Image (cartoon, rainbow, N blue to C red; front, side, top):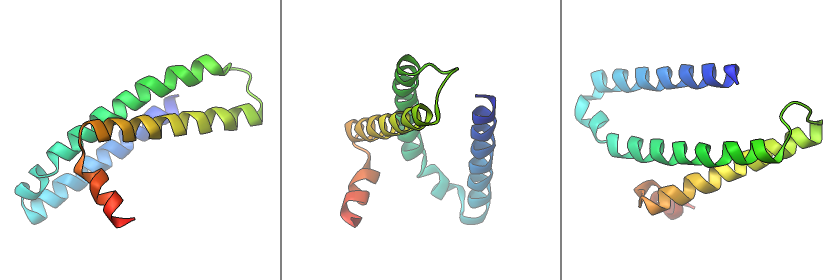
Length: 104
């Protein structure tokens, strides 16, 4: 769990550094245009994790997993997170979903 948190914090810092670099290069108006999308993504991701994590913990004994149970737990957690993230994004009427659907 500590490694996952550290990895998330490093990726978040990297993303923020990229936004600052982009703002300095292209202007802050371009970065401000991303704020609604960023907030929708944060809400959807937070709710997805809040629902998926306890479900996986309840279904699998965290301390004594076989390789197959570990793979099943990872698959269940990933699929649940994806489904909830997409569902919340749809409820928030995220334009990114429409763009994705148009491209496929």
